[in-house]
Length: 367
Image (cartoon, rainbow, N blue to C red):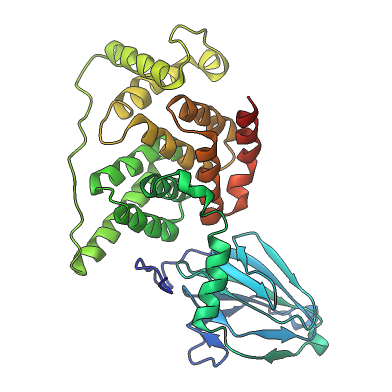
């Protein structure tokens, strides 16, 4: 395993909520480059806080604080490990409470920048004791064990399908650094340039034009960098667009496609939003299920796998994700494969995005 992914993001491109500060160049207690920015200026408050940013694979040495420490992850993906315990994978929003004199280290994942706020507790008598480096083999073993928690179960999805999930969820989330890594995985899994473009184009229907366009720009950057490195990726066939037709004919095509996709008869009574706002249902059938789902290169199974992944990445739209999970089952995917989809999302974006839909899959297994 390489310590850093081939896709790289610069310190300036890494998006995070707080200033990156200055590089701690030559700091003897870090492997790799980290950046430090003070966040608290009022000395009377007596709560020292700093934003610490780690480049991919950067981590600090084993150390301990006599007064304890609190970490709040804010961007990217990182790790925290206490001596004698498994490493914990950290995602934005995660909080780590470190008791006094507990030996530990923290830093970035091998393939992601990472930032956290560090709060020094009991500053009046809190001293840090730096110990030994986290050697490369120790770091790789610890991070692989955490990141591959679900690897065996995920083999029910092919490498190509796993790449579709990673690409879709990162594009839906709008995490361009992680998306770059996922795009590399897709190309490594044998996907053509045009197949991946289809996923990123389809993203706009579920996550909006801004995220779709930024995802396409990220893919352009990945391809440019690979080209400069002498890698020529396979373009593959171009997708065939739907023939020009009247709105009525396109609506009929979308209506037929949706019925075949979902297994719900085309003449079923309108309910929910389709009944409340019929025009949105018209747009869905004319455009989404005609213009997009009638295109080739990706099978309907691929498109639904991508759709669920994009929606899960967006977050907060669980009813739509659940309905498309049902379509996945109708298209021949299994509940075990949907579980693997959520595992990949959790490993990529964190449990905040996967956990809301695990009960849905469990209920599907029982039905």
